Structure formats: structure tokens, C-alpha cells
Image 1: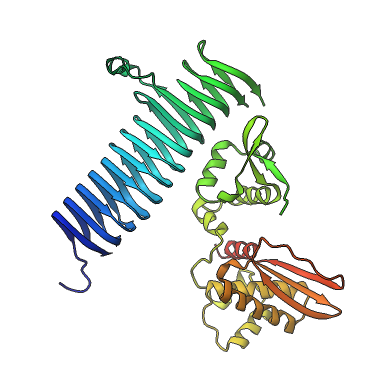
Image 2 (image 1 turned 120 degrees about the vertical axis):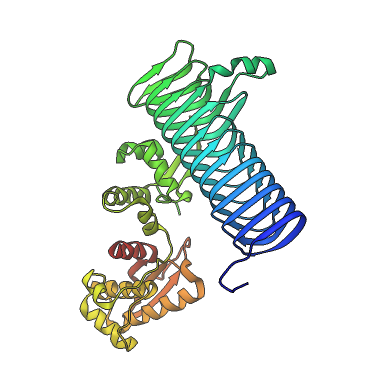
Length: 241
Length: 207
């Protein structure tokens, strides 16, 4: 092997590899990387664990993945279950399984079709979700586009430019089949320029143009432009500022 | 420090920016996380900011955002040194220091190689202090010594310099806020230098 060419790490079956600077890291089966790793592609099929930080251009988790350190990557794809103990920053994050972030998640684009739990802040240029989310801190993006899933999603606060929250009527049958709750978004505060909500329970909504659709239950709305309200939207107090 | 605060609502009104902009700037790091101060009020939780700091910061962002990209701006405001070298000539050309000060610097260093950011910063502070007329050349050099010593000891964290004079005798010290200081009554504060502010100014001149 020449000096300037980096090695691949491939774990088939069961194995552990030390951290380091690699070309590609691939875990098929069950594997552990015992330290900080820098690589191009980091792919887990099966079960993988990185004990340190990961810096890569791509990080795919198919199956189960657990990263204990900071993650900096280009494309993050988590299908299956993934847990990140430290802050994650990436270009695009696509979450289609169940992922847990114990610290901040930062990306240009976040797409959620499974379920995501972020204990701290979640920020992106665009945040698009058709799944479930639980965000312990602030969800902030230029465009926040949420199609509520089957049950309740929560965020401490939501802030951005354009915030749209919709229910998906097509799922009503599936919902009644599972006997699930109504879809609902619960949050303390929503702040944005253009806000359009459905099935949202919030203490405060502040924005320029605000449209409140059916199923909204808002304590206080403050707006500077136009307020539109569906007949079955429940609003405690309206303030035009 | 008991600073005056401004509520988020008042801030948006006063600066006529939107929620979207505020959140975007926060995400890009143009407004530091620790300026967002959460407080309970009778209407629930509200966010407040250190008034003078946030107003001047937003003012500068608004003035510059048409010429410079947000990411570059974030670099300007980040309290860290940027990379990139500059030749002595271009430093004078960009108005970072006068040609006279540059000549002094080259003489002291003994060559006219390109300057690193750290060197530029100390040179910039040196030049500003000197041209203010508050101190003379040997005092300015003394200040520079203190700055370098503190930079070695504390890294980038020492971010304020105090130049004082008591009965005509010059003295100078560096400190990292937040601290409270108290002088005896004969001591006159000649000048206070905010290193982070100087760093921002310098980065803007280089951009």
C-alpha cells in the first residue's frame, strides 16, 4: 500500500477497528470504531458504533448506529435507528427510521419521514417532515414545512420565515384503524413571517401574516399583517401590533 | 454587568427586521447564542437581548449584508482569528495602518515579509492607539508587549486592554471580561481597547 492512499476499513461479521484517517468505512454485521474517524464514506449495515467523532462526506446508517462523538458530514441518511450523543452538523439529513440526537442537529436540509427526537436545537435552511418529531429546544429554519403524522409532535419553539403546518387527510383511515390520537403539534411559541397552521396547540403565535386552520388552539396571537381564522380555530387573545 | 436589555418584540420593531431574518442570523452565528436571554414575564417566557450590543450588531449586519455574504459576515463576527496573509503594502493601502506606522513595524521586525492575521491585529491596535495621540511611541510599545504576553498566557480570551496613567506615569494591563475593576482616584483611564471589536474592524478591512 502506498503512503498517499488511505485504507478502507471493512468489518464483515463482528469486529473492532481503531479510529483514524481512512478512505471508506463499512460495517456489515456488527462493528465498532474505537476512536475518532475521518473518512469519505461511512456506511453501517447492521449494527455499528463509533466511540469517537466522525468526520466524513457521507454517513449512512441502515440498521442501528450509535455515534458517541461529534459528527460532521455531508449527507446523513438514517434508516433504521440511529443515536447521536454529540452535536451533528451536515449538509443534508434524511431521517426515515427513528433517530435520536442528544445535542444540536444542524443541516442545510432536514427531511424526516420517520421519527426524530432532538433534545437540543434543530436548525436548517429547510425542514420538511411527514413523520414525527420531538424537539426539546428551538426548531429554526427558513422554511418549516410539516405534514403532521399519526400522533403528537412537539417542539419547544419554532422560528423561521415561512412556517406551514398541515394535517394529511388521507391518513384519517389509517389513524382510526390504529385507534391513534389525532395528529397534533404542541409548542410554546411559533414565530415567523408567514405562518399557516392546522391542528396546532401553541401558547403564543407571533408573525406577519397568520392563518389559523381547523384544530388550532392558540392562547395568544400577535400579528402585524393579516390574520385569517377558520371557524373552528380556537384563539384566546388576538393582538394586532 | 447590569446591562440594559431589549425585548425581542421591541428589537424587531426598532430595527424593522422580521422574525425570519432574526432566526436566520442566529443560525448563521451572526448573533451569538448567549445574547438570547430568556426571562419569565407576566405573558410567559420572553427573549431579551443586551440592548446596545444587539442594536449595533444588527445595524452593521444590515449595512453590510448587501456587499458581503452571510457566511463571510459570520466569520467577521466570530471571535477568532481569520487566516490569510497580507503584504505590508496592501495593509497600508487598505488603511489598516498608516505608512509611518508600517515603517516602524518593518524596522522593528527587520524584514518586510507578509503579515499573519495576529501580527496585523497587534499592528492595527498599535496604530490606532498611537494615532489617537493618547500615548507616545514607547508607551504604545509597552502596550504591545502586554498584549503579546497576555495573548500567550490567555490565548484569544483576553479581550480588553486598559491604558492608564497616574501622575504622568503610564501603565497598561490586559483582562478577560467579565470583570469589574476599580482604580484609585489619581489614576486616569487613558483608553480602553476592545480586542474583539478591533478584530471585527480589521476583518472588515481585509474582506
